[in-house]
Length: 131
Image 1 (cartoon, helix red, strand yellow):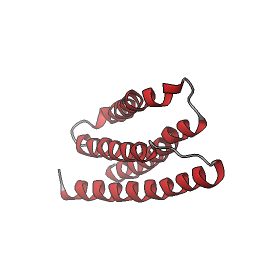
Image 2: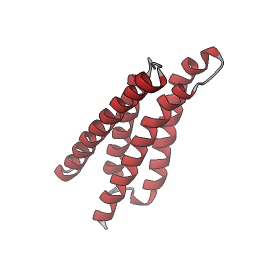
Image 3: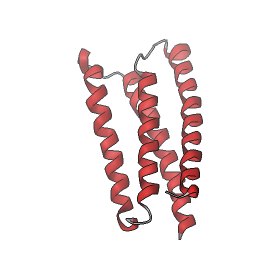
């Protein structure tokens, strides 16, 4: 891996960390002050989404030279794998009482959307630079 690729991955990791940290703060404040609820798995959800998204991004950057034609499939595969692992890990906890609440849904969906948006936005910028 080249120094430029490592720099891109580090910049992305920092952007992901800062974005998810801000979102996490807002999310916890909304839950505490407006919904009057707590979500014990919230930290794990944010950490999982952040780390897995950085790993998928790094993999795509690594494979873009030699496997440029299948990057879209690798991206979809990475996203699908993240989704499957997340639900295999978190779904049993969410559905233990038989109901998935809006708070539990937001615990998954908000960090997932933020991570996905940043990943796609930065990947488009990186891949456009290469052409």
